[in-house]
Image (cartoon, rainbow, N blue to C red; front, side):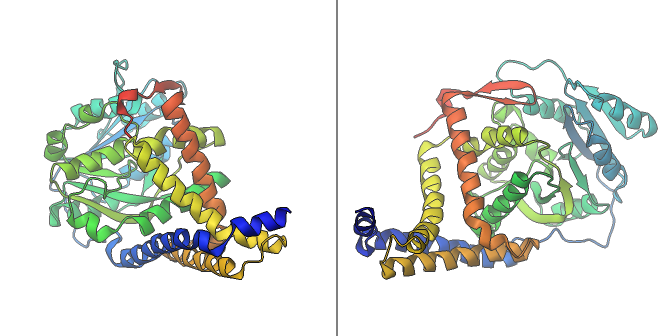
Length: 397
């Protein structure tokens, strides 16, 4: 009885148009991934060193005692030496402040400041970054996360690229030093979205805000452009500050540029699975502009990828499905998605087993996305000891 019902439901004619739609989307990810081999470029290595412009390097830090020292050392080791390093201690309860003070005493370029009390309507990190930007004296300002290590020449290369290409915001794709299995999986998911979903040629040439991806681990601004878009005041209650700053740059018709530096910058994002869940819950739904319709469309596409490429085959091997035409559609989708993931695997030198695990990887992001949606719409969020509740006025249909 169950077998007959399954074969009636999983009829070729019932699913042909659904599969054709998925084929088109999967093919788009392949084409985008292949073209991004040309257009998602590595940050160019520059031969000439220039120290002509002062750069203000700004780091907000809250309970970062495990990582802040290595971040400071990677900055003070830069070939580009015309910088000031300002680090804000955001009311840390660990040894973060004393570590910063130790380095500030040894290096006159380092300044430690204390965060002011959080005003109403602001998120913690955004308020910290705003205070930092107010202290900055440089013509350029560079925001770096407290858990980010940069190689010796990255600042020099970025400054020269920004000047040559007349860029207003230069951001870099970082590598991730992951110690959690789930975080390692999310690293691959993020790579897939950047390489196979963001057409870089269009993102570079069109001032469409949604065609951008900005990484808070490395955001280098012309200070004048940063000020003109309103800085952090304009996004004081937005949890995805990096994405929104990039969108505001493009919305104001300034030049945004993304380079790949996955092998030159490393960041450690989460120490525990609880932090990982909280972090992605805080970010995923807001990154989609709080749009319920966009969330549902993307969620259903990804869910369809997982079910469409695995369920018919699973039912076939269980002896419950005998429709060979439907199995062929399933295998075709499986191959297309495998190719899409193989592009990411080659680009970032991931394990050869990565393409085989894509149903699990996509399932993980679906669970985190669902948690993000529920927490943002119905509950509150907690991050680094602070609780946030989404203003319902932000929600869009």
